[in-house]
Image 1: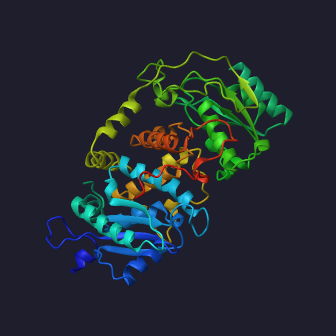
Image 2: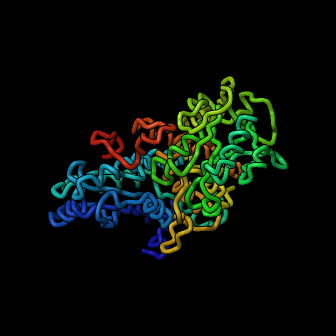
Image 3: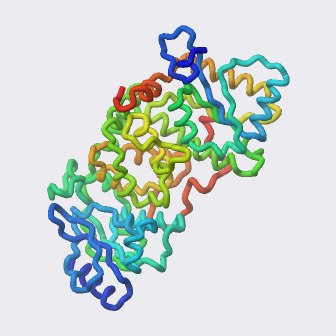
Length: 159
Length: 290
């Protein structure tokens, strides 16, 4: 992997392009579920980088903006199913925030397929596998998030 | 107007408050005034040019104003919603402020024009306003003027944006936000931006690049608007304060609509209504979650 690709500054024309997806997952359900998928040797696309957090309500919308700024082509946010939160109510609050974030990103022109919200429990290794494969497939179809990346590279200029 | 001046004079003379925050005639148009001397109470005015949301001066982070002492504040309906918002989020105590509400007949988009209120000149915030006679007040003054004409521009712009593809919306906002000079006037004018330290000024980690680059501008506005979800009182001061005329009101309105649609919350001047982002319902909409 060249330095450019590693930094997420690859361009659409590069034939070696493969999406870089960042997953913010909660420690108690989705991380454990992803772990289960791994130990079960389920075959998954290697594009998703997992970042473990204590709870889905720990996900600050700025994490997602920052991921795009640093070259992510897609973002996954996943936690416990509602009602199953380790902290009882964390994901209920998170759900309200994600709903607004989802609407705002859409209104500001970020394709909604780039940001995937999901609930994956500790026993849903298969669901995690599907989520990873589906998300990778969808982001691949959208291509590199070059709008954000161009904006990053050019710094002071617009488009 | 005399009613307002007499009331301010009385409150200051009696010592009920130490400062009356209202409007006075400025060199170009009406401007905020901080009246501490009862003899200057005659300077106070209120008309269609009084656009500023004076509730932003109640904000506890404005220490220079807090230091003047207990304040009475002149509010229109939209400003009363901001006062309610500050009370709702425990930023101020009800007993520490005196609210002088004025019945409002609408304000101008550009107060310097001093034009007649028409569908073009009236501020978008005044369209279908339901708080022309505020319910949150200690004193309610003035006669209720006729309802202002509705300026349809903002609703039309939002509808047009919703019809566009994501790529077109991206291009639109890139174009608009490219003008941002990161002066943070939108934040300073906003009555509901009450953080003691703004995320935009945090440097470890550096969440938002302080320079005015397209990506930093986008991150800044995204964060600012998200923080206003369920808080925005639709006073449009961000848009008016913007020296680059970025249509920030579109973002504010869109998010307010989204909050209303999803959480059944509409900004109001009742401080007992709970802020929507601090609560949840177990059956909240989750059609966007896979």
